[in-house]
Image (tube, rainbow, N blue to C red):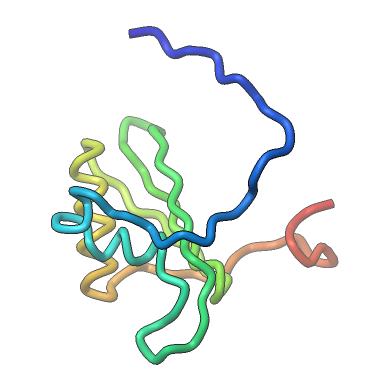
Length: 113
């Protein structure tokens, strides 16, 4: 199957106020669904939902996790996409994600120019 060129739109909605529906992921990847969609921590304090980017690099599937509220980032890897999602979910569930502080260029508050 060939990858189709994406159609880049302009404008449109940029946010969503509806609760996330995890579908089949809710059972097998519940911690990942919660990381991506939860707007509060277990103590009730507010949080920005997390971000996960999946990529293929150097012969491995890798996930970049970003905990936006805490300005922390982590990388995890596995040999298959399914394995990667399980590794990410299990690390989140066990609170064993190797978080590091974001690296942002000095003098640029959001890393943007």
